[in-house]
Image (cartoon, rainbow, N blue to C red; front, top):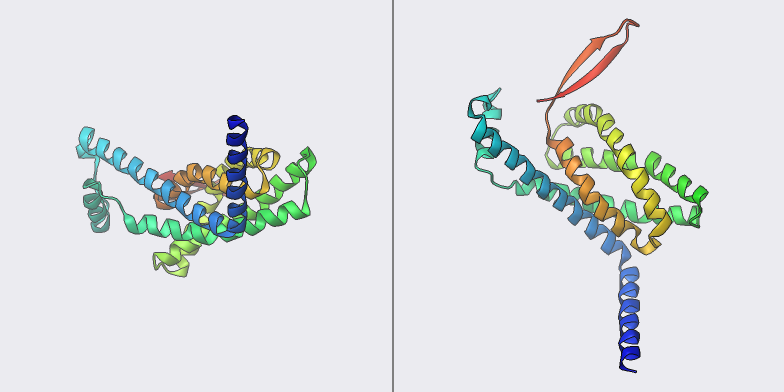
Length: 231
């Protein structure tokens, strides 16, 4: 009898918890999206500091600043302090993406109900072709605005990094979202996506703050191929 009471109490608490999550689902999804974005940036910054620490320790002569601005950044980075403004900006962009994720998945489930293979593949395709480009655009443009950059600079960065980022996005998210649409209940889908986003946001943070140099190579067909090299 006591065991039945414990099970009944556990089910009651679980039901209440799910009811609360559903009641405040938009807020939960939005806040978790912002927090996961911030967490991904924190992990990426620690990784950057660790790599720079190793560079200073084992290859001190190879750390050369290309300009006074780079020299200032190198000096700041050598102290291994955390850039809280950068993490704050990442979190704000995550908070902006949260409502979009929330309503997009709600709409997807209304348009394509069920968990059969055909429905899941359609949802995954729509997610990758609509939500992914939209979120990447919000990411780069939003951070550019928060960093007070000019429209021309934001546009240039978007053209430079969007394609490479989306290629990785296409490798990471389709299998992740297939699992999401097959097995995860609707009210937990954004939470699941946000948890996976924290892993992906480490890469996004890297792509946002890494420096690239562009080289155009002329092919025999008189077309040009763009090559990106990390500085």
